[in-house]
Length: 231
Image (cartoon, rainbow, N blue to C red; front, side, top):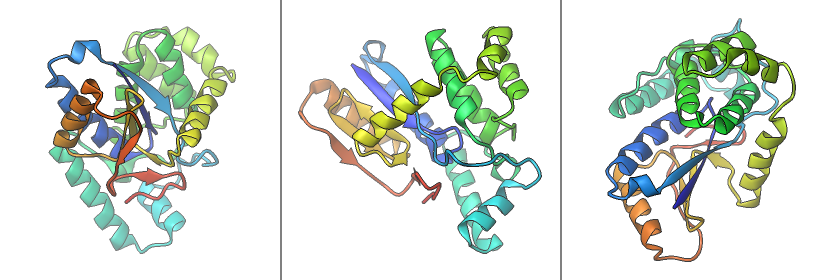
């Protein structure tokens, strides 16, 4: 069975949802018969990377909310991440365009290293506060997981894999996906958001048994939409 997952490296709920999904998949008896494909989704394709403004200030200025409320939202997401075994440092994250990171993910896919690359990119942005729009940073990340840093740098200095990123995003639009994370299981079940482990467990089982023949969406508020609004 094949599972497609749309997400953005900039999305904190995508990392949390990844952990919840992994926990469900790892407990599934036939997990070795399931393949997972990471698909690209940019929350803000027009975002201009800035290294002079911290993430909290950038969030406040772009969403038009007060700083205390923004801090409270950051703290809630950080606590949610901790419950999933993740350490978030959201205020230290760099507001960065994610296109290059998605292009790296597609390069890694053809090298058989998509899973390790996805994990490394999410950790770099949300935990380590690295600039995921910087070619040297991305090359270093790629090298750390065994990818050829020379090939990666050459690729990033071109426009290679930009087309593949756009194709993923077009597929998402065609399916009506406008927020991430979004999981499509066996082309029969759609799951939106960082759902609890139990929801993923049941969905994987239902999809495996092919009980339904059309896409069913299970949604909650833990998503970031195409405008970068996170609930």
